[in-house]
Image (tube, rainbow, N blue to C red; front, side, top):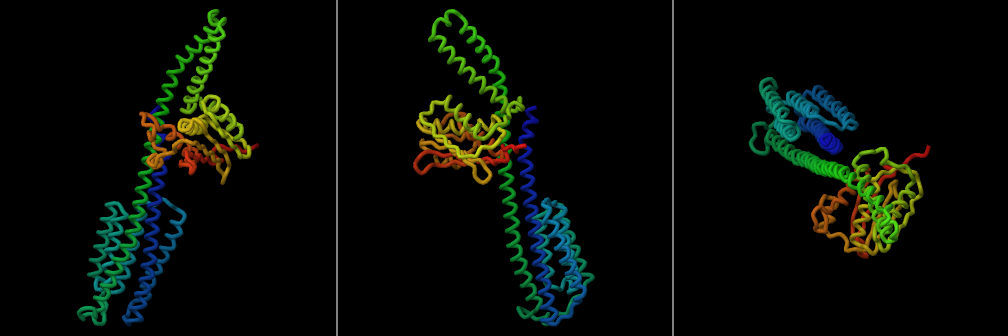
Length: 439
């Protein structure tokens, strides 16, 4: 059962990690589409300059047909990848393969290996090495090599003016220089973008792994707390019976002071049983009894009343400006708020404030105190387990659980220090997470 719970806890993070990988693949496909548009513009410019500027005869009809096919493929790619996000290695491989085929066709029609732009094959090979799996990259290398070898055998060279001139006056040398500059510029721009996409994807995956580890930690604590709650149930029930028997015994019933102490013990025992029941409910047991339908103001008013009655707070400032609405909450949501209030009380026993308001479709709960505030290193690691300024083992789990409960409900927890002194923690929870539509 514990293994199943751990697997369920990891599932949202694994799905988010998969989405991160899909986003990186989609961005890389967009880079290939942009590069293809640059290739189209470059081919049009080159054909115009060579055919009409230099006066070299080219099979323009066939070259324009190849160019039209490349444009049609890129338009189709743009439309497809605008809607679809998941990009596989095979789809990236096909896209680069089309680019290699288009380049081969244009080179075949414009001089083959005597064309200085034959070195653009290197651009496709390098992009495949960055974007594709190993087998796909080696396949592109083999295909590009075969295409180059085929061009050297079957293509017809084009007579270039000043072909045999040396130095910069040779059109072939000029074409090679342009090809080198173009290759270098495109590689710098697009490899930089692609690596940025990959780094962003890796960072997101690392964040998702950290989140999965935290959620696994929570599940383990929930299992431990659930087991401890079960174990405590029997001794608490025994104590309840003993105290009930004591209250009926003549030695105690005739002594008002002892009866008062027994009553106080029973009240504290009832609170312990309530805490144990809350642990079991939060751990997922008797879940049907955990959720309760009420209104937001009733829930907050009862929570504040119960919290103040059981905590030694000197001054509690409660302000609620939320327009009342029906909601559903469970003990995890209640415990999340109490954790923040307890931390504020521990730092500032003389004054704690709770402000409740509704903004931008979310409930905002701001808990403030007049204590020393958060240290900078605590704020940097806010929400991490065992991140506490108290310096005691096992501390710092309250806010860790609060952050993760809020995140599970689609909300956020922010912490900071007040300008006038003290700490402030803002709980934000979307109304959709707890609101109930009236029938």
